[in-house]
Length: 447
Image 1 (cartoon, one colour):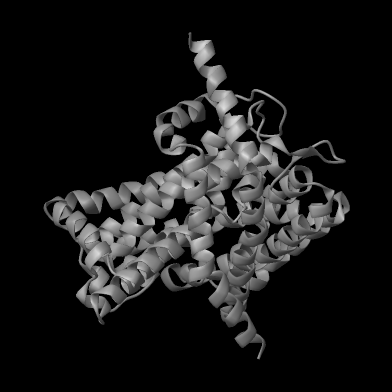
Image 2: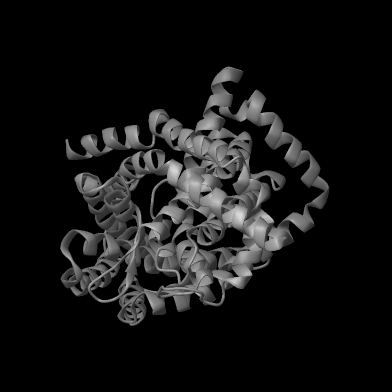
């Protein structure tokens, strides 16, 4: 009965209504910002490379804040999630994933702007922020209960989505490909995560700033190699992706309209699940950035969606289509694995290494998100117990079957979006005003 309840909640939070709300919020913000988040992508990259240096109050550099956010979003969604979308919805799902990312830029931007603008200094002297704080400080103390809901969902979701589930995936990969016993992988992962967590956000950010670029280069380098080897198929693959988005594909069966709707739904769902735009997780990391401008940090934050979906997910999707594995038997991560094995020497080893790195980085990034959510609910005294539980959870995850845990974490992760979307819509005028003022000042300084 409990599992049925969880399935019902999942059906809502990842169903058409919620996807429309997530997409609709992104469209509303994009219109209100007059397309700024697309036009200003080059400006955002310029700020990112400037952002290696701190310029304001905060615990970590703007660059490291983005790397911390990316550490939690670049993960299994980029490998298994894209394959699931293409396998069920056809190549057209990738097109709708791109569209979702374009409006998701505005959502991620707005989240970070609000997170920095309404952040606080906690009792330990650290800058803290995120949806729970911009709900409380932006909407008023009478809305604190809504921030509490977000914090509760966030603290609990992490133990499934980014803790036990991730460590379980790593232990299975290491056991299957390298014959490493799950007991050993569990102890090693717990130990490594413990070493990082002791140093708090500064050490998490330092590790993320080295790990995220490394794993991204390995993965993108591998996918680019496959695409280069199949360069002749690339134009036809792009045509197929666009055509399938509007006309459906034979592989999905049924009439064309149903096929198109399936492609759209899978593309939107997996795109949002991958880049987390609208779910409210990334702004928790960006709130810790040493910056004196919410808007400048917002432009850096939106690059998370750009890199995660428009770059990494696109690489995965194109590989699946040009190699033809999208219409075969394997689904999920197994589909991506079949492409790597067929195209690259030691392809399965390369993908396994990427999965391990992606999962490990997710454990680190989400540990900080969960910790901040727990602190909002119970104060700084909860930090040490939370870290201990997080480390124990990583080991426990390697030793158990996690079907129900995965479903529960999916549901909690989706429920995080509800308080966040309410706040984004109600506080959108603040985002629009801050953006106008910032770029008006930029133009004045340029003159």
